[in-house]
Length: 471
Ligand SMILES: Cc1cc2nc3c(=O)[nH]c(=O)nc-3n(C[C@H](O)[C@H](O)[C@H](O)COP(=O)(O)OP(=O)(O)OC[C@H]3O[C@@H](n4cnc5c(N)ncnc54)[C@H](O)[C@@H]3O)c2cc1C
Ligand SMILES: NC(=O)c1ccc[n+]([C@@H]2O[C@H](COP(=O)([O-])OP(=O)(O)OC[C@H]3O[C@@H](n4cnc5c(N)ncnc54)[C@H](O)[C@@H]3O)[C@@H](O)[C@H]2O)c1
Image 1 (cartoon, protein in one colour):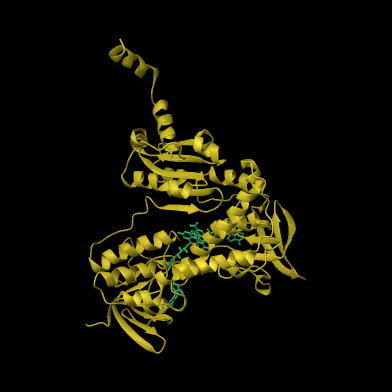
Image 2: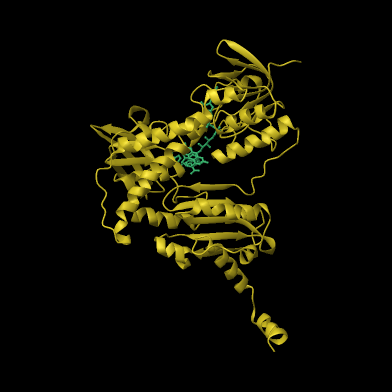
């Protein structure tokens, strides 16, 4: 059978763009279908705007801490409209890279229409149909808005409209203490808003190692944030200009009153109205598309990647999964996903970065042997920069590194060293033989390896060395 295209990609976000650019550059005839903005969540409403916003926010925090560095500066006149204008200008500067014109220049046919599967090989785009040998669903995810009493009757922000705010909230109430709620919540606090974060979990960072949540909670409290954890959200209501959230925590009901509400209660996959049920593509109970390790759905020529399939909702994961799909479609390599060294960073101040297995995961997989924690307080560079945090290494058999967590202002830039060590199945002693530039926070890896080596160095080792070498 002859098809119009080798590959039809639905969704031009982080995953779809990699498939389209990679497929076309490898000689495949590719159609890319996008119903909204090229670049998807990451460019327009996710990573790029949030990290640009956080640069201003964390700078505001540095100004407030300037007295610690001998400078008496104070934070005056935060102009949120200007902050958000900078966010828009950074998006604009990246936009050409993801644009229709660039992709057409790469030889991709771009259709700015909603795509819907009609059968295993046919996709409707408006009035038109196109056919493809392979179809890749990369339609991403949207904010999940749970059924909370009164929520649909008040104005609320999500990641889709928060970067359009012009006036700094006086009191921002954030529903959800996941990465979106914590990054944006702390950002608004640094700019001067009062911020309350409400979450049903009794701790924050509950997907990370157990030391992270309490450590970061203490930090947020020192920043002056109000954390309502282990709370049930009973109702949301408008009272004049105020929005009021009624919660129950510790058996008591409380009203929290603010002027803006941000909903960051997780994501729901964009898998509805795509024709998936009709043609029999299997999904889980939440609507995530089920895909095997090759990222193939139960219909063999249909693949899924990125947020619409999970399990990790990150731009770098969307790109990684897209590369696996390309290997399987173009080169028939039988490539499978390997989630043993997945990094992620939450861009709070300080940043929290993780890679590989957490202690809990390693234990449940029977891989856990040991762990070690080293405080940044022992690091000269951290002292000179007033940075705080720690590293934790999770070790498997033969002291092999299988996971790590770093908390530091530079954590996101420090984690790739461990990612490489995990990928290459190295033990912690690798850091003993590396030369780290002084003074850097990465020297802490060497300190951790030394600590481990000292722990396993017994008195009888010293006696033998003395006897053989030092007589
Ligand atoms: C506030 C926020 C901050 C984030 N920060 C980070 C970060 O710092 N680092 C990180 O790694 N990740 C971050 N993420 C996550 C990251 O943005 C996502 O993991 C990533 O964008 C997923 O890419 P995707 O291609 O799967 O989906 P998307 O980027 O959502 O793209 C899917 C595209 O498909 C389109 N589409 C949907 N249905 C159809 C249809 N029927 N027809 C045609 N087109 C359709 C959509 O319009 C969209 O453009 C953040 C997310 C948010 C919300
Ligand atoms: N730096 C990054 O890489 C980054 C930043 C932002 C977002 N992201 C991605 O986007 C995804 C979504 O982020 P998110 O923060 O919206 O979602 P999330 O699912 O990670 O967190 C949502 C939080 O809301 C809480 N919650 C859910 N329903 C609730 C309810 N009814 N009452 C009280 N609390 C409730 C949950 O306990 C959870 O802590 C992340 O998982 C991540 O993959 C990544």
